[in-house]
Structures are given as structure tokens and as C-alpha cells.
Image 1 (tube, helix red, strand yellow):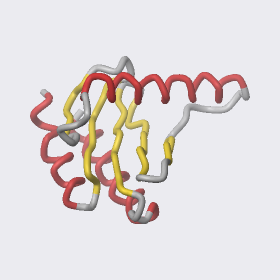
Image 2 (cartoon, helix red, strand yellow):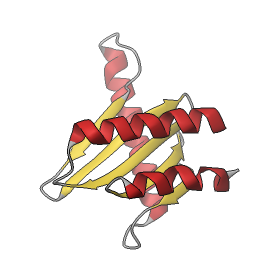
Image 3 (spheres, helix red, strand yellow):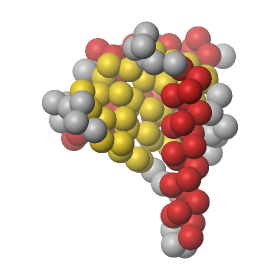
Length: 117
């Protein structure tokens, strides 16, 4: 089933995203298109862990599940978006990318992933 997500990630790459991954909530890779220097399995596990920890923290505040997390550094951002109960989308972008435009593209990708699943 992983190959059916390849087009979704290819479309994101065209939009200025340098890498992306569709991951299940356990950190298992469903599909990735990450830069060669990235260890896909480690990246996927860490993204799932970040989302899980954020959901736990939110739960302590009696809030609903986390929709999006932004990890920001001087060199760029990782945007982790919850897709469904069992899936997340992580994208890697440079520092110069505008978040509003990226969020629109991520929303489109999330919609496509939900349609496929």
C-alpha cells in the first residue's frame, strides 16, 4: 500500500518542501521522500514520539488531540501534522519558506492521504 502515497509526497516536493514522510503513530514508515542524509527510520520514530508526547501533554490540560507541531531551528522547520488516528505527515522545509503557503499545501496532502486510506 505504501507506493500509492508516493504521488502525494512528490507533489509536496514541488511546493518547496525538501523532504516528507507519511508515518503511522508507532513510528513505522508508510512512505518517505527524505533527503539522503536522513535516516528514515530514526526520523519517523522521533516524529511519532514528538506527536505522542504532545498529545499526552495536551491530554493533561483536558484538551483534544494535537493537530500540528512545528519544530523550528535556524536552518528550517519540521512540520508534523496529524492525518488520522493512525497516521501523521511530517515535512521538512528550509528557513525561508512561508508557513501560510505551506499549511495550505499540507492541508491538501492530508486530504489526499485520507482519501487514499
